[in-house]
Image (tube, rainbow, N blue to C red; front, side, top):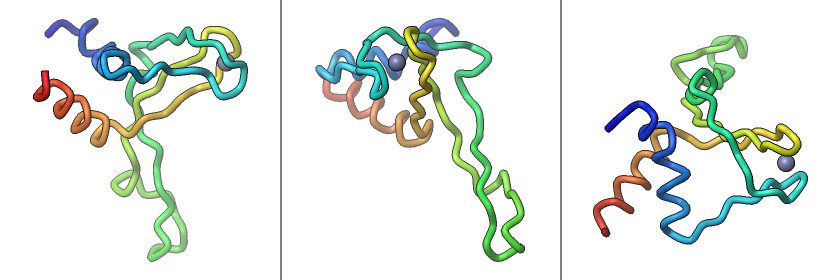
Length: 91
Ligand SMILES: [Zn+2]
């Protein structure tokens, strides 16, 4: 699988299942995936350590950016991967 294919794996799987993404802000349906912003981690605050940031508790995120208004949709990478794998197994 090429790097380009990996970038679009989640949006393609959603489309194949009839899940048509629409921006919740402007209603448009055109999104971009930036290789640089494709995967990042939202750190969590650790309540057991004075609410300091803890990247180990964070959530890896996959993002799609609305081409019309720049709103960012975020998807949990571990959960998205398991959903895409289940979609692929059904086909
Ligand atoms: Zn939008």
